[in-house]
Image 1 (cartoon, rainbow, N blue to C red):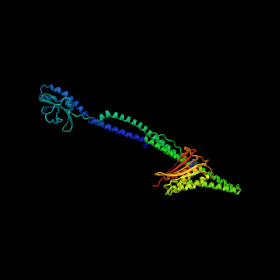
Image 2: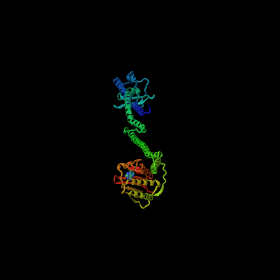
Image 3: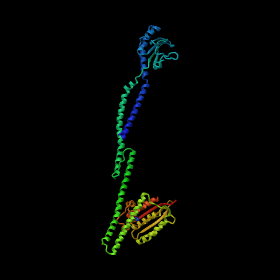
Image 4: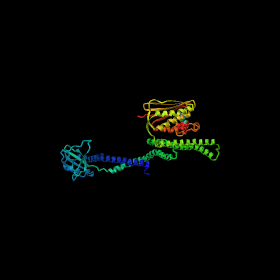
Amino acid sequence: MFNTLQSRLWFTYIFLISMMLCIIGGSIFLVVYRGNVPLLQASSALQTLRLAALPRLNSASDFEPETLQNMLTNNSASLLQGRIVILTTDGEVVADSSVDQKPDLPDFKGAPQVTEIGELPILYRDSGRRAWYYIIDALNDDLLVFFAVNRPRLQIVAIFRDQYLGPLMRTGLIALLVAFILSTLMSRWISAPLRRISREARQVVDGQAHPIPPEGPEEVQQLAVAFNDMAHQVQTSQQSQKDFVANVSHELKTPLTSIQGFSRAILDGTVETKQQLIEAAEVIDSEAGRMSRLVQDLLTLAKMDAGTSAFEMTSLNINILLEIIRRKFTPLTEAAGINLHTAICQEPALVMGDADSLMQVFDNLMDNALKFTPEGGQITLSSNITPEEVEIHVVDTGEGISPEEQKRIFERFYQVDKARTGGKFRGYGLGLSISLKIVESHKGTLSVTSQPGEGSHFVVKLPLQK
Ligand code: ADP
């Protein structure tokens, strides 16, 4: 519950909102505390005091100390807990509203100065460290009146509670509500595609996964794209595994049925003459040979897939291998009524490679050319050297391969027309995939270009030995 994206977002928002409210509340508190509210209150108290006292003092019959002292006794200063003192212009006390002479007078630093109009009251501290504000007015040319009031103690908590707490709480609640909506939307935005990915991931094993549309934040979209790629690869590999097993069983079934049929015929005496017996034995031999070739090819592929095929890499001259191939195929092409043309380059083409495997590649390409070229056609085996590579070309004037088929002929068990390439020499559609694997293991490339009806052109490129 607390581990979900939504709850995490929600708690983060609550934390942030609380932090913000605390900071704002704290700042307001400080502003109120440090603000000029006490000064304004003191100003107005001093004004009140002044307005109440000055006209009365001005109306005095004389300005004798006793008269003034009498006027100051029982005046509003005591009500306001302030003090009114009548001073000479030198600062001598003439009359005082305070019996105990509290608060102490400030240090005027010389003669007391009349507070100008618009000037703010002056703050000072008495001997008990209490803060006071005062102003000084002129009563006449010789006398000054000093008014002092206590700096009002602010009920900051009360002010804060009455004025600011309510709005702050309301703002906090609205922010929490917005945060809840936002966190819900945000977590849905992120987690909905993630949930879909995890749901589809479970289906991958059964081969049932569907492509996921890229939704949500950029990172999640990238994950969806990567997941789609992965699911596609898994499905392709599962499918090719199934196809592989189906193909192997299919390819084994035909020769096995044939072998079984002929051996039964021998056993139950259907085969009567020696001639029939020889023919049956020949079929059994040829089918067993085909099966053995298939098993051999499969083993080669399995070893290369597992990376355990033991290539014996030596420095070898490709031209010598091509010469051996030429010798092998000369009588075969002659027998098939096909013209074999060879143009092997003169310079030695040295590569690091496994001679047997590379021979298998050239043999397969030549074998295919022979199989798919009709009588009267031509096969050209040539090589040339570039600064980096040696290129081996096998060109025939056979039936060719359509562009769609060209992409697929390197797949395992793929044959353009299974029924066509007949006879006991019929392949399994494994030759080119094995050849491609071998060439790639030598860091080379194997490619084809072809015009249906005109012939095919296979090129092997191998890096030259440095
Ligand atoms: P196979 O052993 O059946 O020949 P390959 O893997 O060598 O298997 O070839 C796969 C398929 O590619 C062949 O069945 C054939 O249809 C096509 N192919 C290969 N080489 C040629 C070629 N030279 N001309 C026409 N088709 C070819």
